[in-house]
Length: 398
Image (tube, rainbow, N blue to C red; front, side, top):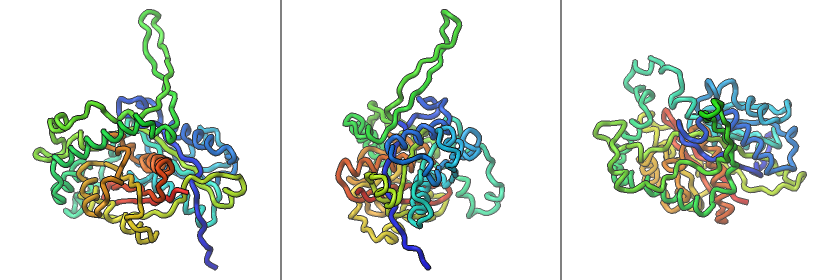
């Protein structure tokens, strides 16, 4: 007998501030420590939930090796002091890993297999390089059609800019707007509700005593947004991926460190514990495109999501479109006719940073809190994914 799907509700969601890699506030903070922090913080937002009732913890990580290897999900669970009975699973779909974790957690609830799940993401780009520490499979180079797998992300952005005719001027204007929106959001306190400040220890030598002095400070604000960003300054930057290209450090996402976590529960748990839902998880979709233009992945994922959920694009009031590069963001927006006024109202990854596998979890916190603050019904998180994929998740504020 087919089992009827039930709804999965978000009752708590939070994130760390995002640090700049490799020299920002979180440069020496391990990814499992960041994960433990958001796990503890998100449970504080829902004190009615007994940690022993958590069915599983799903954690996204784009480069699950070295400092963020060894099943970082389970390590984070144990470091957070959760009961030994709480399991943990690490998943990897590159930049959509954190969002995919939310989807998997929601599906466990929707199928009736679980009542309480935590979805999270963690990534330290200060400790793990962009492509990890594994060499490329040489079979990739045996056939021309596979060469796109080996392209650096910046080169794929150049391919997108060329094919979708996205000018350097438009990319720089988009980047400047990202910083302006992020700075305005910070000034207005729009990120306060979603951020759980992190205590950072700074070690420095005391030359007078010959000892190392440790000072603790509260890290509570995203480091990426720059007040000194200007059209003139962006225009002076040289292309970094192609000699005659248009993609620069200024119109690309920032390498970052961060983590986020979300608690999802069934309707039964809502009623049993008197929990107030923040949002309902509506659906998730992925799609594939050619690896050499991986940045346009959302043009495959978003229409699939809309078809499967029955929600019309114009019904969505808030769209978190990850700004891997201005070139791909603009290409996606133009191809799908996304309303610029709805896209990244608080700025995006060009200003706020992109800690790879954690980004989906982080932006889930942003959109859930943001929709409630602005009294909007539907919000979507979407991103391109390395090797030619796109992902999109839909949320309903309740």
